[in-house]
Image (tube, rainbow, N blue to C red):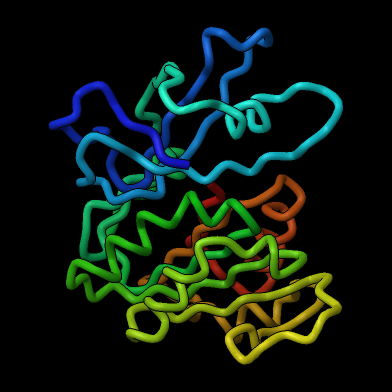
Length: 229
């Protein structure tokens, strides 16, 4: 979804790795949701977010936000920090006291959680940054893999290494989705992510269960530099 900001000659003001909160003062449930912008950090007068809307009988903000008409005003707060990417391998993750340079960044993302890393991928892939990215993008079905047009383009341009893993897909998959199927296992992390060493940082985002599973598997194959986002 795309939103405009009141200062049409200014950027949103977030940096790579930061996120914002949105709430609707007219919504009858006091709910604030957090989103990682997926537009470029230098886009002027607007920003894009990825909304994972789960439609249910109970009202929720993610569903509500997809029904808004043009011109509806939301409150924006932030920025808040998951991590900060300063460029050319220099990354800071305050939660883990990480502030160092890495030659290799491995990313494990589940479904819509790819949004937490999309600006990082885009920033490295389009700005002459020679930091190597290895992405393992996991979802249950093809429909849950989002932002694929951009990710595939970065792959084809040799900007990133990416593997798409489908856990529950039963349909035939075309050649663009030739990655593994089934549950994620340590062998997949060894095969598709940068190898564990002092120059490698692994970033993980997804559901609570997914993050726990990924962390256990990464530790099993001796990755030391791990940040759960």
